[in-house]
Image (cartoon, rainbow, N blue to C red):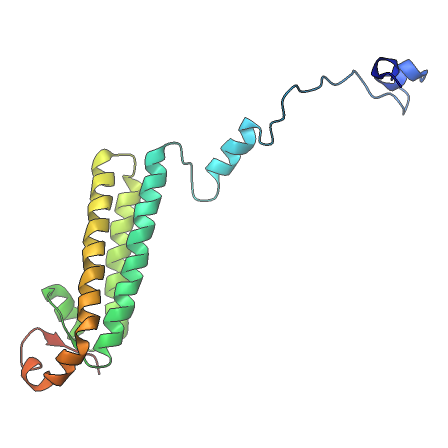
Amino acid sequence: MDHASIPANSTEIGHPPGSCWDDGPPVPQATTFTPWPESALAAVAAGPIGRFATRRDWRMLVALTLITIVSIADLYLTLTYLQSVGMSEGNPIARWVIAANCSWVLVAFKTILCGFSISVLWYARRRTSAEIAAWLACIVMAWLCFKWYGYTDQVADVVAAMPEITETSLWVNID
């Protein structure tokens, strides 16, 4: 059967206009297939976490996610060592918080500090200075990962020398 002989709508078949068989005007056929119309892409980009209009927004999301993941790992390792053999803490503010001898105080301190910092960077995400600060923070967090790697590698030597080490003012633990 020739495609030219197929009726385009129900009126050509013989049904009167306005009847339940009326299909309305012929629908133009698309020449190319587009699985996602522009409005659907815009709706996906607007999504539940906000509008991502620029590539910088995506880069900031990646950087802040990395900072969050490493901060959680740092908190986990800190609590693990503080509640077992103890550790040397170089940050005087963190040493002061740990002196409270309460793990939830440390968790609250680190969570508030990290949450505030990430919120400020996310709020200022469209500024170049905020992106530079976020990537510098990622570099610092990568350095922290290497420090933890070295610390966990040498923990056996540290435990063997416990009597000499625990007498220094930098050594802290949570009972």
